Length: 100
Image (tube, rainbow, N blue to C red):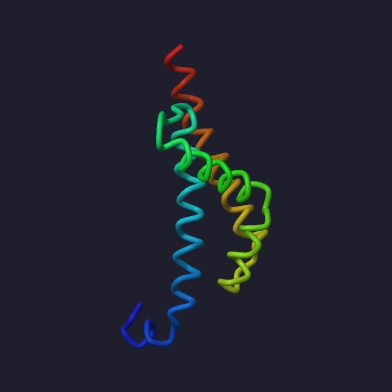
């Protein structure tokens, strides 16, 4: 992104994009750490990550709202996230079978 492109983006648009990025990151973090639930103070974060994961998979309210703020298609985001989850499990599953 060039300098001129960043000036065309309003602070509100940058905030909406950052919120969507963090929402997707929370969903991915839950996917990659769901086998080991955290203890103590981190349980609240784990709960938020789980909600983000479920919302992204189901194309829920937050996915739709964040997509709308970013002028994106919520169904597309949800489909791509589910495809990522399928790829993740297809890569993890053969490793788990090999360890048996």
